[in-house]
Length: 536
Ligand code: ADP
Ligand code: ZN
Image (cartoon, rainbow, N blue to C red; front, side):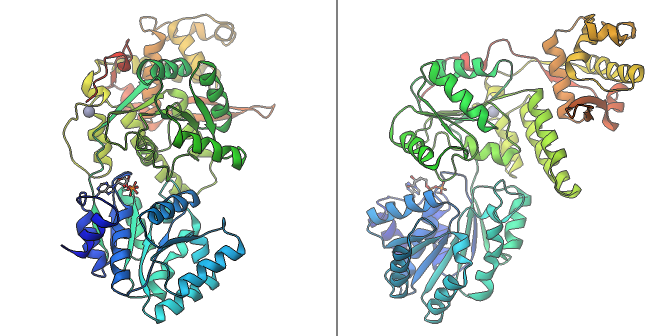
């Protein structure tokens, strides 16, 4: 029996390595560098914990684990203690005496795994300690957890991670293993470059989470939709509802609680003690629904989260994948549910436009948003698209909304042209832009005050879309904005307010000429969630 396998069995109590774990563990025990891309819940921790213990037994000293989250360090160190492993952490939660105690144990070889926050690692004092250990040959390995934090393309950039190149330069020969659940090509390249892992062996696991059912539906009255989803399909079960703003979190948590759901809010604006209390309850009690911003979730290992709901759209596919990945870690059926509408597209585009970043960086963000929009508008298998984004080929999954209830597709080329000509005519007539509501009114032939005031009831396109429902038109508009065939223009008002108006873009032209067919998903009358659930 190999040393690694006996540690797996005797210390961790597992019968077998999972997926690529064994190859990774062997590689690192042998002194090689590794970059590990594995989805959340895939079992990354063992990939450095087992080598750390084996190498310590070989007399090679302590493993340093760089981790960005205090809560995660606490959990891991606690679990290692229970398994009888000498583990400790150094972070800002320790008092002076406690930190000194850890340092002493470190110097005397009493620690097998030391977890440290990146900012701690970069201090001269800590680097000095590592120098001493290195000189004695007592640094067994470096593990860099959540390695995507080094990349500005990751969703969780931490500047302190940039300084981790020092590990390679200052301590050559000590194996390094970087781990992340974020695996798009851009982030991956960035990690390799920033951490100087060009020589590292790359281990990529499948990112498929077959037990998660992906569902994306059109946003109408999102609170009602969410309530219906929870009550019909997940009554009494644990879940996470992601919102974009703190205010929205507070409101929605209150609404759900008012409807008898065991809901708690979580966001960075809440008092630390309240956050901790809510998180503890979520972990310990059954059936708590956490309504949260993305501040919640990283490092939370709760196996029986039955659903993750997005009432606002995330920024990109990495975020979506990471957040939905918190559902169903126990392998049992779970739902990833998202409601999405025109406002989401507009908001996300605006946030990018208004960010102070440089143009090149913004272009990167837009590309990432477009990929997510394409996923949201997709009429074919969501999982195939999701995995393709991470470079993985697959076949239709049979466990997403589009596979289970293939959406009817209608030819919206004509409707799209009507809409675009209306934008054009309205702009020609008034030389100012208008929002979606006004355009709908013109198209559907509604002579509202605003329509008559501007004389838009005299336009040739007035009433041209009367044969289409408002919902159909909104769908067309949303998808045109999503694909960039309709652009947004910000208009500043004298009173300081600003609003978004719709404008034609370069891409509008080919749609207007009918060169690009527009095929859109028919809005499904019954929400896919109303099917019977299959539980294995
Ligand atoms: P990640 O960090 O990749 O999200 P973790 O390391 O937290 O994943 O592991 C996820 C879960 O899987 C944990 O509960 C862990 O104990 C379990 N696990 C990991 N490897 C194995 C294995 N070889 N056999 C059984 N369970 C495992
Ligand atoms: Zn599918």
